[in-house]
Figure 1: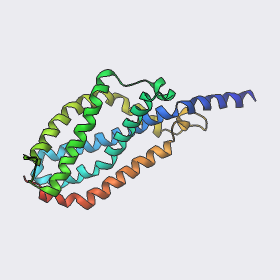
Figure 2: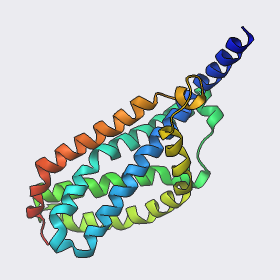
Figure 3: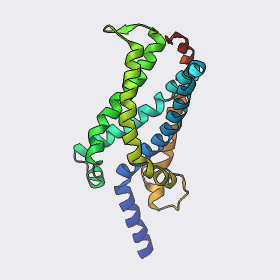
Figure 4: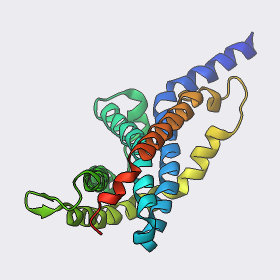
Length: 210
């Protein structure tokens, strides 16, 4: 009886922090996926003329994981500032990272948005400014803020992702936190959606004014 009560107590405590920690793990998983995809995208920049199709393919593939990452981050932001106990206990990011957060989101959307626009509009302009120039300028801004963002969080990724991958006993915290199956399902769906967009739209790379 005492053992059952103890297990129930541990389970209850784990469930109490499931929201914030589950959200953190989802953010870490999608962050790891994005890190790999952005690295692959960076490789295409080394020979852009020859790899333009793959540059565009990977760029479109990123759409799904980027949406999940922005969604999980904004959800944490909303829960923390609305005073939800789990997220308040978890605490906010460091001040510099909180300041950079909106710029990470905005520059990511700008880079991807202008890249997609290039596929549909080619060498057209936006309010008199060439879209290709806007794409390059937003990339420079994105690279600056993203470098700081990645360096700040990179060291935590292995432990957060690893904790979600490890099998666990029925009532351990790792098995309860935030629905591991749901997190990996969301990641798979995000990659599937991105892959569908990439397969359907990568041919638009031919519209780019190189």
